[in-house]
Image (cartoon, rainbow, N blue to C red; front, top):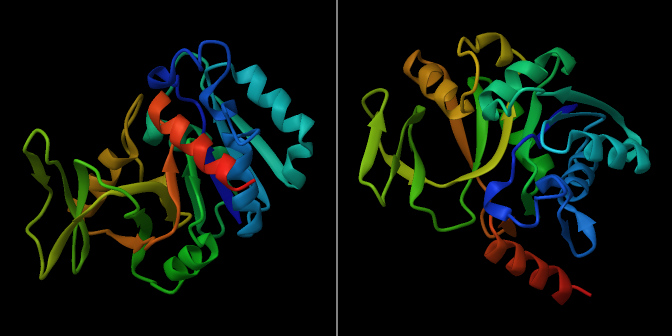
Length: 243
């Protein structure tokens, strides 16, 4: 199984922590975020991990090598000029994916206890799904809209924005996205967007074109996103409480 870890971001909201190190190497409980994510993916069955890089790329490269590549085949996708976003990052990294089985895409700033194996199997058991997205785990003003056929829009409760790419079919629900995807190997070949862009932009176009993108409810599983100093402090408090 392949897995792409998105680690190229600047981590601007985590300053000053990210002035000298990349966000992916910020530590929680003495362990860098990248290692939290990589170890979980390996436990779920990943034997090739692709990591996209930009901010302090050399530090991530050195760290991974020091950790023995987590015992699996690790490839790096360097975004030299600027971070390409989640969609641009996937498009650039696709050359490192073997393209034979569904693969994970996982943000590097998330610590979870989601059952990743169950999520992967749920995706594989739905032959009509192009992508399965982890949903739930938090309160959020931003959401993705799903109905009986899958993803059909997104919105922001704070701004009142609501964008639908097609009419809903049956019951619908608005769900927060948890930053973890399982995608069929043909996804990279369906990307037509270029440059810097969010994968959500691609998903919306694909949903409009009739592709099925479905949610996976993470239930009560631990989900921590380390996006700013306050959230980092909460994550570190959680880690400390486990000792």
